[in-house]
Image (cartoon, rainbow, N blue to C red; front, side, top):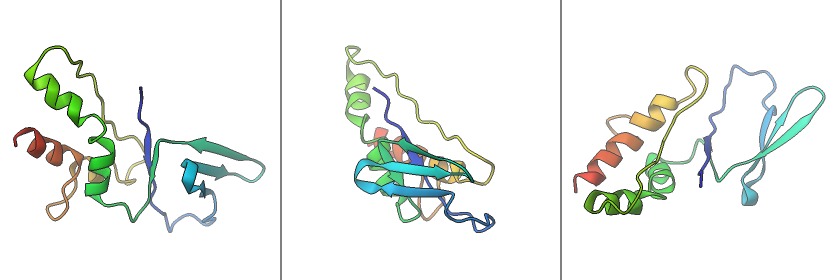
Length: 116
């Protein structure tokens, strides 16, 4: 079953700061507005600017880490997981996947976890 996460980052270049709004945090619903309409989208998790890299890792990779660890010791478990970053240039894909020296992203944390 897919686990879909969106990570939001504000953009001070955008004139209308209300074009995207977290409309219902309890249901992970995000509203996207244009001049005439509103569309609502629901995700498994919505990460904001305050979400740490550790929190992203435990939420995203932690959801299937058990399967990965069991799959390394037995062939009974399928290991068909995909973590993908998608978005506009400069939106934070590389930061989420790779991170920085002071706060590693998903991939370095996954490699460290697998090598424990």
